[in-house]
Image (tube, rainbow, N blue to C red; front, side, top):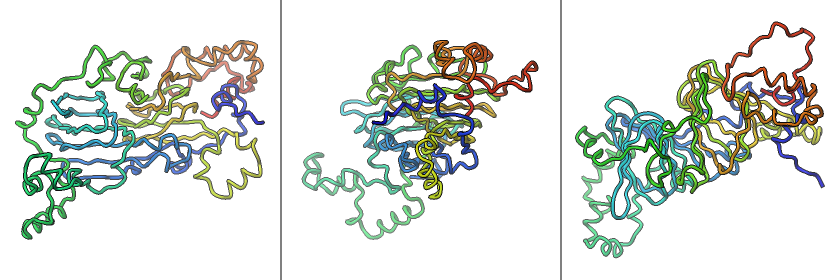
Length: 455
């Protein structure tokens, strides 16, 4: 019986990433199954006040994302002094503010709660709630990212019909203690019984702007009314079960002059614990690098919010099978299992609006050509451990016993240790490697290139 060895263990021991077997998928973004360019978002709604866009289903991009088939990513954008009208949520949402200032109102049977939101604020919206969101800023657009779990109503671009229209006349009259005509006129907007001239006017309006009532303009006075009694995210705690929390209100878990890494895990927050999700934000300074690392359990969906850069992710060659030509598949079958275990480098540039996915156990590194800001949602986050493959601290390779280093790497244990100590930074570093004048032109291949050569 064949024993399946975990991919990250193979990477760690340097069994499969020999230089001769490394392939590079940097030629085209289409060949990178881990990247979702901004044009892969579908516009669900757009008018002069803003838009709502939905990212392509993850499992439709590649079979390796089958565990993400119940997760969808949405982007909301609205102009200053506008309002997303009340919507009934048929999915659980994790909402994160990317830029701008908002007022979120969440309704419950006996009361309503309003929250002032700003960049970095995150909150859970449970399925079944009704909520509306206003841009309270005078000048800046509001940008929001939503992770939906799962998303029943997001399969098409048509405006959803009022769910009240699905009930019978008797149920509605009894529920509202009113006659059906009034209910129809005020809440449902049925057209069949409207006078012809009113239907003609309504049809012309809808033709000019389908779904024109989803994002509307509001006055300063209306914004002030909405903001009354609105709470702000706590600067002391992220443990509230219903109030927003801000990533920037906590100290970064990794930080130096090259970057900052903020993260809130389900162990620290009950809202995230319900869905076993983590949320993080990463700031990488221009010319800097988030060092190679992998996650032990969590698959992380990362959105590029500001700046430009590049990511490199290491996977097995056959993970890109859906993007390969038929000839490549036949060739792989002939060459057998040994070739199927080749390491492949997936490298792509990042621009604002792009999304990439980091599966558990897949090493990744991110560099910034300008100040880069990333926001991520991690799935299966409980007890996740981030293992760095380079850097002075939290370097998993440095924990290997010396006798094992002698067996696992081409170089001696002494050479491995000396190489590991070259990098004085942890987590983030200068993206340009330091050239060492004392190196011999006949130097031996780096002792740990069997792990890192794919980067």
